[in-house]
Structures are given as C-alpha cells and as structure tokens.
Amino acid sequence: MNKIEENFKLLVDNIKRKWSNISTELESILDILPDEFEIDFFKRTVLNTYFKPETEKELKEFEGYFSSFGEMLNKTLLEEYSNVYSFIESSTKLIIKEANKELEYKRYKPNRKFSSKSEFYKMIKFIDNNIYKFNHSDYIIIEVIEKYIRKTRNSALHTNYESIGDEVKSIILVDHTNVDQRLRTVYSIFVDNINSLYQVVEDYKFMLLKMAPDN
Image 1: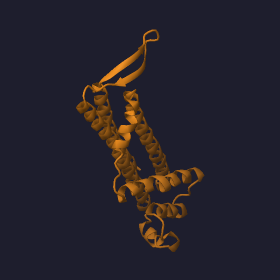
Image 2 (image 1 turned 90 degrees about the horizontal axis):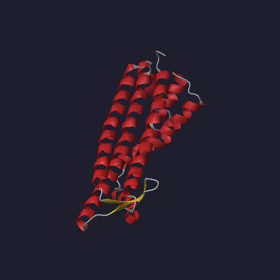
Image 3 (image 1 turned 30 degrees about the vertical axis):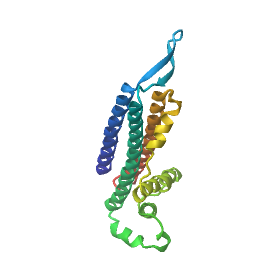
Image 4 (image 1 turned 180 degrees about the vertical axis):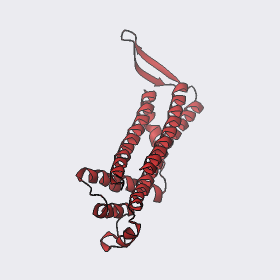
C-alpha cells in the first residue's frame, strides 16, 4: 500500500534528521574536549585519554554538555517510541479501512473479553479473524509491539519525565579517563536502541503490506 510506504518513509526521514543533528552535537563536544593522551609510540596507538579541564568553571561547562547530550539521546529515543507506535496503530487501522470492515470492527470492539485490552490488540485479533491469518513469526513481532513498544510509549506519555542527565554525566566522567570513548559508548547505546526499534517497525511494515487487501 502506497500510504503505508509513504508514512514509513516519513518516519525514517525524520529519525535520520535527528540522528544527523545528534552526530553533529557529539562531534562538536569531542572537538573541544581538553584531553591529554597517553601514547604507545612503538605501536602508534593511544592507550588512554585524560580529561583535563583547566578550571572549575570549564569542568562545570563540560558537565553541562555531557548532561545535556544524555538528555538529548533519551528524549529522542522516547519520542521515537511514540512516533513508531503512532505509525503502527494508524497503519493497522488503515488495513481495516481498506478491507471495508470498519463497521464490522466497531461492532467487534465492545466484546467483553477485550475490555481491558489495547486498541492495537483488538485490531490485531479482528484482522486475524477476518482479514489476514497471522503465523507464529508474526505474533512474535506483535508481542514485542504490544508488550514493549506500546508500554514504553505509554509510560513516557503518561508519567512525568525522569531526567537522566546527571546519571549520564557520572558515567562519562568516571575518574576523568577515556571520556571521549565513554561519550561515544553512550552514543552507540542510543544507536543500537534506535536500530532495534526500527528493525521491529520495518518487520511490521512488511507484515502490513502482506495484510493489505490488494496483495
């Protein structure tokens, strides 16, 4: 379905823009780190780097940079859980609409056994019974969406945001050695989380295309 493909492309283009901005921010911080290097001249490798701010004021400035960078990563990740889930839910509704079964679904929803279930769960059960039969692999993806992505998105949406800036700052500044590597590690964890999230949504997109009435 063209609409699903178009919306998925918008979703991916959006995270690519954010990713580019975050990468630029990372490089900006790395470029100005007051580092000293321990070098193995025989092997021509850097053994360790040492974070050496010249003043207490400079230290506080970098603590602010590290804290803000951690917050940027965390808020972006939580935003993507929301964006991804919105795509999943709206695309699933589109499958029901394109199958001309919206009225039938409205009659199906009030079923008592679904009273405590999410809209996504209800739509999946309706589709499984009326439009497309899911296999075991499909249900593994559905379970990840329902039990992890949806719950993470809801938690971020309905609870007060908990700052992680100080925690990230403490991780990066452990004994003031190899701060550059720790900063990159924090960024790498973010990248892994985004990649994992988008792998699930891409797998679900392929499921959606199989469900589409014209396939």
